[in-house]
Length: 125
Ligand code: FES
Image 1: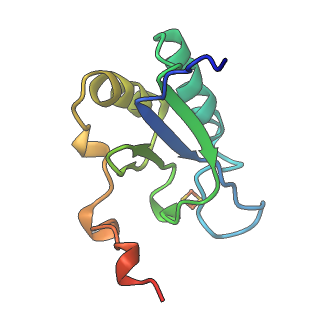
Image 2: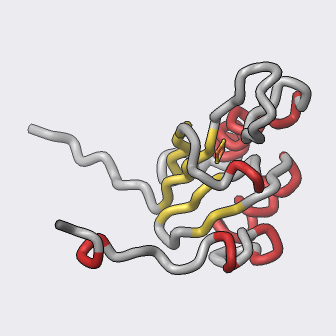
């Protein structure tokens, strides 16, 4: 018999892409920015410390195509893209959005850089 594992309320996709040394392309994890290398661990540890890791799943991803605004992470459900992340910003997002239910709008990507999602039905061949 299967034991039901509760489904998470949130998935947080944290971009862990790093550009190779010497590459001019911006990336979310940077060789010369130690904090950028620690953000995923900080996210996971904070979720653990707050006792909510079972219902909020942190996921490491590759590039989410918003490299100029990195470090970035996407919160689902809600399709909320947070940009320019630091440890302090992640703490606030966990407290106010994930636990409190209020999106931290000052850290959300600009509309011009994100906009509306394109429905697959409008593109499918
Ligand atoms: S490297 Fe993170 S969005 Fe592209």
